[in-house]
Length: 321
Image 1 (cartoon, rainbow, N blue to C red):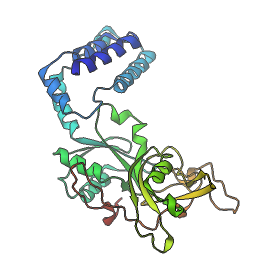
Image 2: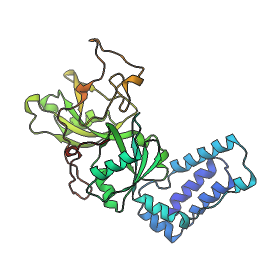
Image 3: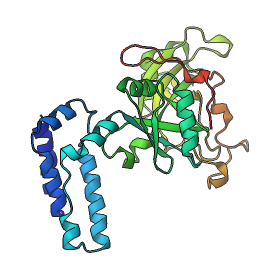
Image 4: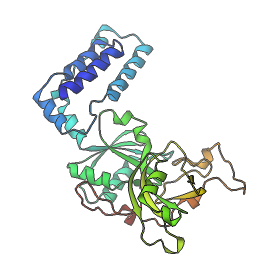
């Protein structure tokens, strides 16, 4: 299986275009069926050696070659055998890549304090700053990684803290690091629409629906449902959706639990109004987005990890800056 997967990468690299000899030599070296590589990859997360990561390396090489001509020594390069990168691979395998989304600048001290206080159920992770608002959290045990992921979403200083399990090249994957999870309350539903089937259909306007809860008692504000969705942070917050049915059209409202800071002018999370060039108003002279998108019911339900263990709700602890 390893030989087959790496063989595909080798074919993709050769078919893309001839590149520098040292890069082809490196990828070719991965094709060898070493005992260490097979055992290490057997426990790795998916896509450690993905076509995307190889493609990213190619783009980097092309950029270098456009800037200047390499000398013979530079072009020959060096070779990294799997034994050389073994230690780094094993360390990264039990780590998370975290990105704070937004215009605010996070500092390493604040992020360390956040991790130690909010993830008190695990041994304090090692935190490494690897870019602007970009961090690596290294844990001693894989179950600690799972606990933190299962307890998402996380908010730091009013901004989403996107956390993903490490894989090769993830820190450069802007698309993967532009999505977060958030609980969405769905309001203004007719009683016969308060079903999981309707919830999945309405939730399809988000990237994905991870969980769904139908509240048995709606209270004085009415019955509603809530869904945990994966949201693309590069687009404005959906304020609701128009639903078409045999009985006509109906506007369905969204409210967001523990909603991060967002711009009232354009609806983008992590964006400030003072830097927004879309300061539009609705027909009543009000901003098109506002605090009315925030749910009054702030507490999100406790989630379970893959083993079925419950974790403490982060809403019981105040976010720290």
